[in-house]
Image (cartoon, rainbow, N blue to C red; front, side, top):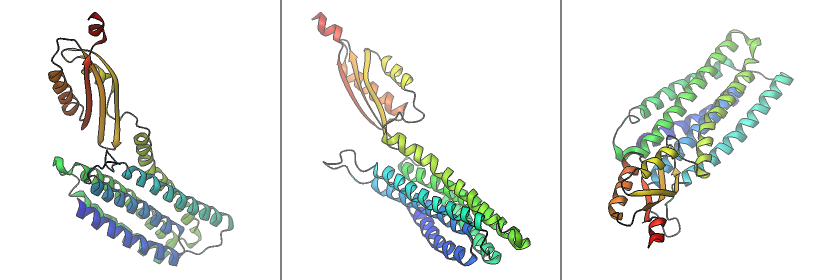
Length: 292
């Protein structure tokens, strides 16, 4: 997965430069906006590579949970840069629509868009093969590879749209207004592609309950363990997408084997709810302490 992400990132960076130069030569904002989408892909790939690398770094005395959330911070930074670039292209597109003083070289626009379609197909083929590997040790890599496949698919659609726009402009030169219109659509696609990452980053930083987990069901499952009389201080959050943490206090009766309850609780959280890191405190129930 690491090699595939590196290959995809390298191809993405090279073609991003080609699109920027080609878009400038063609006078096409749509092509340059596609380059901005490629930038978002590149950043996504780099964040994925960073996540794969950082997940292997051991915790330290200062960063006791490791560096997992650096991935989230990197994602938020990349989204900020992408939104700024998108805003600039929207402004330029509006300016073109208002002034209508621009020329489009349809042939150059078509060539660059066609290369973009080919590059995205190649990147998709490179990434697709590793996105269905089922080995547990490659879980983190697979998450990032699958995300990269989604990025490539979005850019393939955008490059196809730019190619169609260039073809229309070539056949109907007076229809050059299609270029800023296509720019708006490309910007919308870029913005929409960042929303899931933004939403995911926000719920990680706010330590929300991870998606797919039901707090009530989790609480009930712990309460139903033999010997457990009450459950409190139950907290579940994500260090980073895919890495979940849980803590809980289990109150048991005075005659209950606490070690056995602890083993069952840990097994339940790990096997049924897929919680990797758990901290469980087993304590005597208040009523038993009062009775004594």
